[in-house]
Image 1 (tube, rainbow, N blue to C red):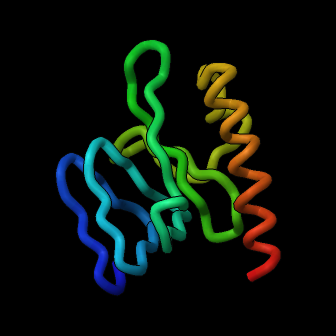
Image 2 (cartoon, one colour; image 1 turned 180 degrees about the vertical axis):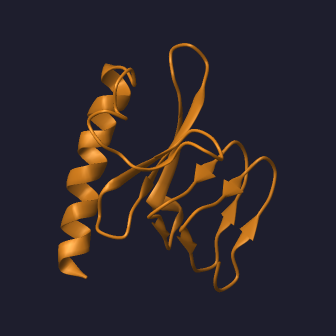
Image 3 (cartoon, one colour; image 1 turned 90 degrees about the horizontal axis):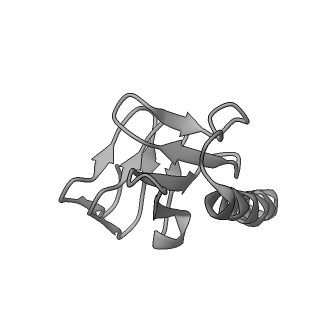
Length: 106
């Protein structure tokens, strides 16, 4: 963690995550391996159909990361994307396109 970031609530920042900037992260958030969080638009939470809360976050290469728990987090692969549901899967595709374009511009 760098800068003026503040973490609270049930938020969990773990693994190789990098969080920099004036951010306040709270709630049920899991940000882990590969994360490169510099603004609030770099992560979002979703509730799956069976009630589990997950975090989608931006990775260093512009890929989408998935945070479920302190032991299940990291860049999203086809295998890890199973059972996310159609709405969240579409959002993963949208974020992947958005963040990979932003990574190319940087």
